[in-house]
Structures are given as structure tokens and as C-alpha cells.
Image (cartoon, rainbow, N blue to C red; front, side, top):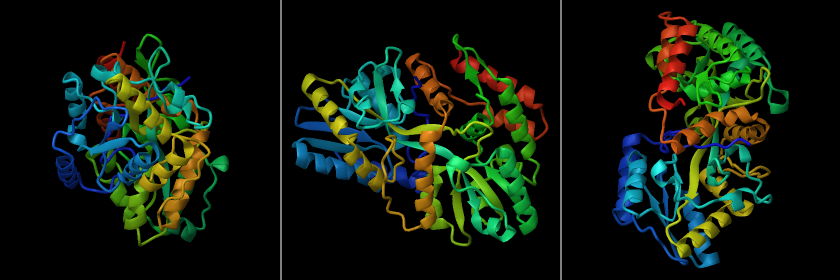
Length: 441
């Protein structure tokens, strides 16, 4: 069974769907909100009728949590104090709270921390409740099988196209994940659109190890993968896939400037002069508002031959074992949240992709393209191979061993390969060495 943790990404601009507010503004607003909630935000060790719940998200994007907390007070008579903490200080605040024995009762966290992971409530009863239909691929578990966290939501890499350019060129594209295209077919189509319409590039591609992993998985590789002893290596399919990716950076199909000098691939796509963009679901709300000059669409991710992505937890829901009464109340609150009726309401109000299968959230977007995009992601995620969650599984295991991948060498090393400064083989050797040094064994 695959178990998954959450990647270390910004909750304010994470691999989720909330990249909508500048970081400085968010941090300021978050600090004001935290101050309004009582300054320190402490208040752990609640009672059967009073709990503290820490989150970290953009003010305004916490609407779903506010709605559920109010509803739970009416239904269960339990007061849940919601505290929204700026991301930049959140991991440290949790760490310090653990040292001071003042953890919240419930939290939506960006990552696990060894200092408090032993204090977590086992969420197995919620995760294993068949009526919740929670995707087991995206749970965080320890070696004994204890469920340490359940995602508040999930995120995934995905493909966007300039639909206007495709139609102008008379080139077709798939709309159903059951009948998707290969990377070979997609690149061939995108190049044809570029040539027929005079667009500048066929594809822009986030400078992101996560986005590269997704592509490698779809091409049959495992990317940088550890064996049973914890030693990392790359398989032949990964080397072939990465060589293919580097070769696409030819300033025709893909611009070299993104991976070599940090040019903005999203801005390039939104200019209307790029055929397609490899990014993820978090772009959807922004595109719904910002793209006016052309029609855009989310399209099925390629499979050659594997139908996969890099799927991550948007946040990790945990409960802390502070005292008997509060722990029992926290378990009941979390159980209530994941009842499908309540969880769907959370997803709809906050704009989440659900970790529960079988739901049909109705999102508040007025954009038809945004509505179609969320519908597509919700169809695709259940189809993805378990490899899609490997990296988050690994991250959870590293944390439980007191390790973390502080610096992923992928971007730097492949940037050098794209620039012709080193071979792909040498770049992969350096990436593997970086993994082994930081989290190997």
C-alpha cells in the first residue's frame, strides 16, 4: 500500500490552487488575522466542548473552514477556534508549540515534523471508513500502519492549451482521460499548431522537480528512486525521459530561458504566444480571471504508457493527543469533516480537489473553462498509477527518520544540461548524489 505525505510547498502559493495573492500581502493579512485571533494563536489542550484548529491559507480562501466550524458548533455544540497563521512562520510555530507542550488540537499542516509526529492521533478509523471513500494512495502512514494524516485536499500537475490556437490551426486534442494522448503525439500536435499559427513556442514547462517527475512517470520512469536500503538511483526509462525533456528545450518547442534563467512560463503562456503550458491545477482560478485574450482549456495528461501525474496533498489534516477529552473531541471533529456531505461542502466553498472519490463538487467559478478543468482533474486523479504519490510517500518517511531534502538539485543540474554545460547523464549523477547525501540510507 502506498502512503503519502505532503511536499514542502508554500501553503500561500503551494502546489494547490491558491496562488492568487502576493506573498507580502498574504503575510501581512495573515499576521493581522492572527493578531485578531489573540496574538499567539495558542490554546491547545482543549476540552470536549472547545477545540483549537490551526490552518495556514490565504485570507478569503479559508471560507470552507469557517463555514464548517460554524456548522459544527450548531450540530455538535463544540466550539472550534480557527486560527489562520502565515505560512512563513507556521512550521516554526508548530515546532515551538510542541516544545512548549502547547500544540493545537487539530491542524492542517504543510509537512510532518519529527518533534511532534509521535503526538498524532491515529486517523485509521476515518481513512478506513468505506463510506468516506478516501483515496488510500494519498495517506501519510508510519511503519506500523498508523494513519498520521489525511489530505485536506489534493493537487496535481496538468496540461493547459491555448484552445484558440489549436482551433485556428485545425489541430484536434483529447478531452477525455480515458482517451488521452502520448507525449509524442502531444508534442507533434503542439509543434504543428506553432508552425501553422506563428506562435513563439509549443510549450512552456514549470521549472519544477514536481512537474518533471510527472512527465517521467508518464514516460514509464520512476525518476530518482530509493531501493530498500534507502540508496537512490535512476532507471533506464528515467534517463531516456530526461534526455527527451532536455532535448525539447531548443528555443522552438520549449524556451531554454525557463530552466536556465528562471523566466516565467505562466506569463509566457498567458501572453497568448505559446501553444501549451505544463503546470497544475492551482493555475485554474487565476486563469479564470486573468486570461481574456484567448480561449484556454485543461486537457488530459499524456500517458506513454503510464497514466500518472505528481499528486500531492494540499495540506495534511492531523489531530494532536493533548489530553483525553480534547483528543476524543478532535477525533470526532475530524470524523465529521470527512463525512462526504460535509467534505464536499468544504471542497466547494474553498475550491479544493477532493481526496474522496465519488464526489461531484459544484465550484463557484463563472468561467466555463475553469469548471471544465476541475471536472477533468476530478476524473483523472482516480485513474493515476500509484507512482503518482511516490515522492510524498518518501517525504513522509524521511521526516519520520529526521531527514529532509533541503535542496533538490534537479533545477540547477538540468539547467546546466540544457545550457550544454554537462551531459544529461552527469546531471542525473549529480542529482542522485544530492538525494543520497541529504536523505539516503
